[in-house]
Length: 170
Image (cartoon, rainbow, N blue to C red):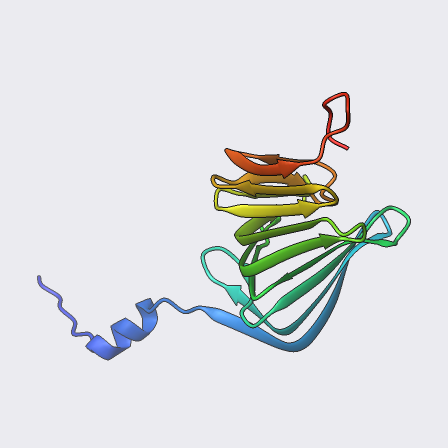
């Protein structure tokens, strides 16, 4: 006994087609807190939440974040032209004119940068520039830095640092 059926090609494609769902928000203002303490405020003109193989939130037009210290005072500001937050990883990929500035005036610039929400670290394997009081450091092969820029460790650095008479940085 033989059975056979015929399927319409369009119907089969409709059932098997990969579908990506997306939510859109305009003029976003979002707050992040941990244990009831304000940690960051994010503002962006456009936010896309994409439900694909990996759920992510994309900021395709611009992104600004104010990071707060434990006293809820702004300690660091971040600006870039593009950001992508990977929810499962708690990591944010930032690119296009990434600038991180502390309230002390320390500045970190890079074409792209990652921020790890769990460790509160910035890192990249790309070129980066750090300007601080008496310091201008250029890194050709990346860096790891704390969110408040109190510790910045470059891979393959070059630049100038003012030192005191005992030979240690001021």
